[in-house]
Image (cartoon, rainbow, N blue to C red):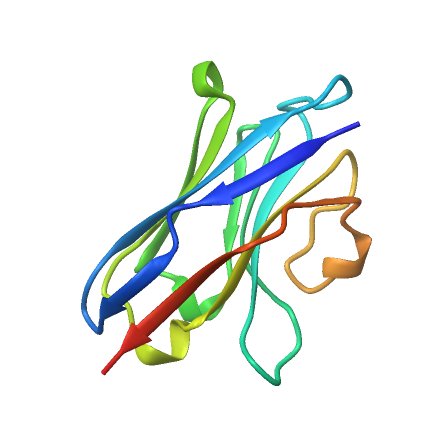
Length: 124
């Protein structure tokens, strides 16, 4: 079993920054899993933001490249998403996800484990 709990969302003005956290736990969780951030804006489909696989491979979706950074702290069992230069179009519910095998930004349905999300609102 894997538990993921997101935090760090909030409301900021355009150009600001936020750091999202995802606390991971569970007796089957492993840092060899693919860990990822997805987001879902109102009325839109869930989309990939960034993936972190086996502590080595990192991939970013186009909207966040150059602005977002995914990282982890194994000692704290936490995955992070640092978001800078935020734009109103970044407004969404952000979800942390994990899977032992799947690791695609374009296939959220393939991820087995999900948190409940943290809301990010960017005002212009």
